[in-house]
Image (cartoon, rainbow, N blue to C red; front, side):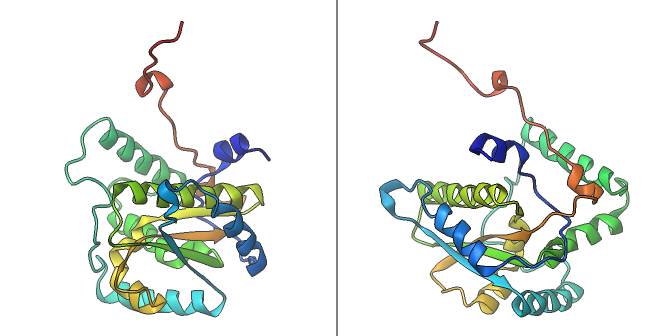
Length: 224
């Protein structure tokens, strides 16, 4: 598989098979992803990887946390801009509608949507997960580097037949995760990621979100 194929076939997988991911395979993917571009070679990313009993323990903890506080603890950054305008708001809305349509959850089914949201904290059935944090002294440029590292990991995983789902939803549980993962106080949690083998028969995994035409976001100058 080449890079273009990985870019075009990677999706946010939301249903995984109960099939373990070997640690040495995750290490191999991380070894590839660490070559992501980094301004000044700061390499600002930190990664916590869990599997096996640790996944079970965290899922059990989260069930109790969600029962007591379904809205979470709040996040340390805005996952989306508070006053999102079009076309971004429309794109986000359509993405949500298309997602829920694959699993027959209607717009007014608030309970169904809440239950699907809660599946984030079960890793959608994935057997392994990663959490990404960044030193608090870092600025926008280094956050961009972190995003490049995460993308590199997802593409390298796709190349090896694995599937992923980057989950900013975990940001609303930064205090719980900080304690569970022993994230140092000088680091801010950015997101989690489910990692495993996609369930090929799950309808939700059939969703492929749209992308805008180049004419909407590219401007050329100086070309004939």
